[in-house]
Length: 114
Image 1 (cartoon, one colour):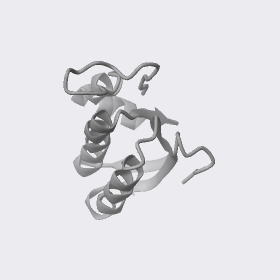
Image 2 (cartoon, rainbow, N blue to C red; image 1 turned 180 degrees about the horizontal axis):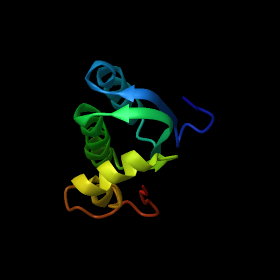
Image 3 (spheres, rainbow, N blue to C red; image 1 turned 120 degrees about the horizontal axis):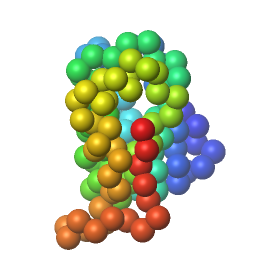
Image 4 (cartoon, rainbow, N blue to C red; image 1 turned 90 degrees about the horizontal axis):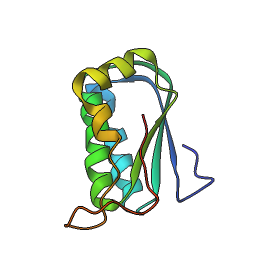
């Protein structure tokens, strides 16, 4: 993980993101979001495989990021993951700005990209 900019931590996800490995990543996401960074970046450059549990971790990060006012950004997304995100509609979720209150107003200056 890159912590050089606390406002934008980068989580490097490699290998397999599946049932056996998703729990620690989810716990790390929850820990990072307690600091309410402006953006949380996931670098998937070394990702080899992802199952539905891994997909649920990305959705969890987006949902919790919405509550924290944190944009979720994906980097170095392998083609197979792009396809999964598109087919499941998660790409559309990630393109939404986080909200800053119950009224659902976007946080100024924040965007998410896939």
